[in-house]
Length: 319
Image 1 (cartoon, one colour):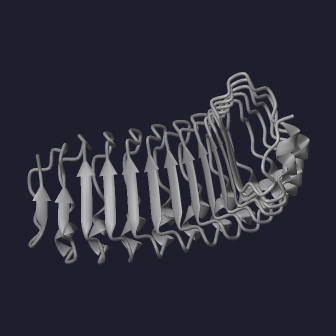
Image 2 (image 1 turned 135 degrees about the vertical axis):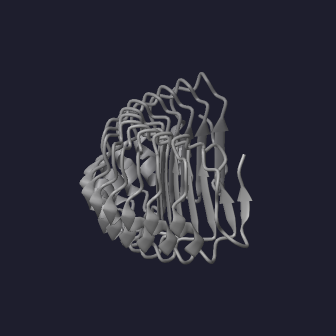
């Protein structure tokens, strides 16, 4: 049996395509803090006894295509702060016990195409700061319990093409500072409760081709400093309420070909320093109110049909 030094703090197992199971001796490493298992294409499961790794803080499983599930005992890893699962295409579920990971701060799942749902218990993670879901095409919705993540600061949902909506409960994320939604082509709108995210500083929505509108409640985001909307080809307008974003410093709208105008209320964005409206072929003019933007330092209207911009003391890029 393969033996490891009992004082081992970090263990990396990589490039073992014939490995079907981890040796049980790993689970006797009482001082192990970091475990990385990468490119073990024949690995089908992690040992149930992994729960004995009482000191484990970081667990990364990467490119283990045959792995279909994580053991339920993973919920007993009381010290675990970071759980990252990447490119495990066979993974079809996360265990309910994941909600028992009281110390977990970062949860990331990438490239698990068979994953169709997250367990409701995910809302029981009291310390979770970052949740990233990427390239999980089978995922159609997020659980309502996500609104219970009281400490969550960053939520990224990337290239989850099957996702059709975000839950209304997202508005309960009082600590959320960054919301990034990318490549979710089935998403048609954001929930009205988005406006309840009073700590939100950055909102990025890109590559959501089915998105036709942003909620009017977006104007209630008192702390929003950056709003970026890219490659949302179905978007025809921005809400008038955008003028209420008193803290907004950067507004980027790019690749929204159906956008024909910006709301006149944009002139009320007193803190706006940077405005980019690029590759919006339907846009022929900027609103007259833009001359009221006294803090504006940079305008880029590349790829639009705008021919006249009336703003003093501002760098204007127009090609």
